[in-house]
Figure 1 (tube, rainbow, N blue to C red):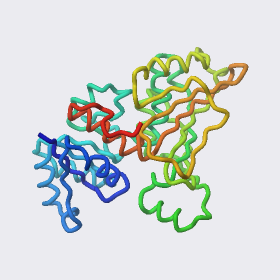
Figure 2 (cartoon, one colour):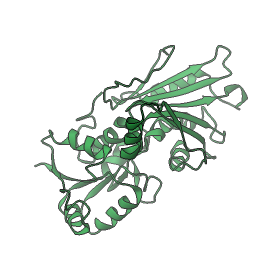
Figure 3 (cartoon, rainbow, N blue to C red):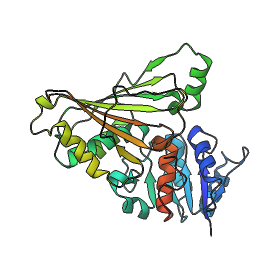
Length: 307
């Protein structure tokens, strides 16, 4: 018997991709509301109470409202917003880092942010295994395709082809920082420097390291070996043993749900660059939601993913 899934916010960028991914699959039966009902609280409440699972593809305030509408139902929720990523009672939906069993058994799962997926994927195993210090003032540089900004930013970039680069988050306090600090196991909030480029999708996240100034930091080979051991057997996360001379994001990037990790080091071992490359709409959003939903439904976690 198919699992019923209500996608609340199915007309947004992430929601549309999830609908596209789940619609052909026999394991799921989708509950979708038409334009007249999708903002009607009563219709949404009925949908939550009729579903086995719900995926929230909503702004933060609307996601909080959605959880309230679902109270008293049996529905299990995957929230793709940032509203509940560090909230008590929610399981962080990064199964490779948090644990697949925890996600599979959870009632409430919060999808990671796209940038934090790269940052946490790189740092959490290294800090957890004491190969990098937890109290270092880490910096994260990242660029993303404009689709990560939702419909308004997509329209802005596509209406003005002269925009090549958008630096933002300049006032600090980006909403991704709390989850980056919490799930990487850091004593201090990282300095996060995000930017958007003139590509529809794709993302590079980088953490530069002054290894020579750190106490008890592992050499670059040790960092790479730790990541390879940590993600051994994963079909989603790949730790590259060879580093290309350049990493590219192309405007023609095809959808992908993979997370690629790289460790670069200087010849004298004093500096390193940890780099993650992913699709902000794949492992950074809809792909991660489908992976979490698969686990919660007792299915192969990679079913329906593009790897």
